[in-house]
Structures are given as structure tokens and as C-alpha cells.
Image 1 (cartoon, rainbow, N blue to C red):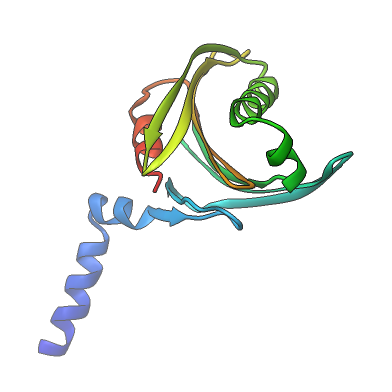
Image 2: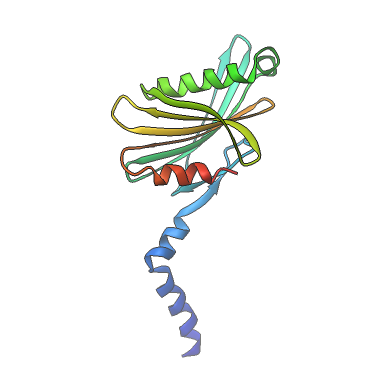
Length: 166
């Protein structure tokens, strides 16, 4: 009888809503990233390389959806030439404009920030389909990391996701 109590207790505990939710959250670090984030659910992995005049740009993204919200963290390896001949602000603006273009979005706020021991840029935006978004951009050497959250309803999930970046 005693041998059954522990397994039954573990099964009962795993059926509690809070226990299931806690197991659904996991730290995610895309290949090449110096930061990770907590994603609410299993992550989809997407990678690619874009051949440019100044060299290959490789990106690795981990993303997930939770209700009407989408969360992603992307690490992009930039050619050394780019980071040598351009300023950090130019790289941040280029990445910001690309993200806004991907969502047919317009910027509502853009400012410098500091988070997780790194300088960063914080973006808020509205998408073409009426959603809102928040993103943080971090640059360290030749690596750009973008944590992005897009949502229709409550922004608390987006805030929590961005706060989880470490």
C-alpha cells in the first residue's frame, strides 16, 4: 500500500492546474544567442541564412503562441564588416524597421533601455491587423538578439516574457 501512495500523489499533483502550467514554461536559447527567455509552451525552431553583399547573415528563432499572443527570441549573427563600419544605432534601427515591416506595423514608442546587464532598445508598436507588440533589441559584438511579443488582449504576458530575458 505504501508503494502506491507516492505514485498516486505525483499523479494527483500533476493534475493540478498550476502544476501543468508550471511544466509548460521553459527557458529557450536560440543557437548563437547570449540571452535566453522563458517561453510559455513548446518552442518552434526556425533558422536561415541570408546571403548579402557584405556577407552571410544567419538567424535562429525560437517561438511559441499562447492564446492570441505570439512570443519569439531571435539571435542573428551579423558579418563582422557590418559591425565594424556601422554604429550600434544604425543596426538597431535597421532591425526595428525590418520587424515593423514584417508585421505591417507602425512604431508607437522607441527608446534606449538597460535590461539583464545589457544596453538595449525597447520598441512598442501596433500591427496592421490591430494587435500590439513589444520588443527588446540587444547587441553584443556581432550578435543581435531580439525578444518580441505580439498580442491582441492583455499585455501582461508580453511584459512577463520580456522580463524573463536573461
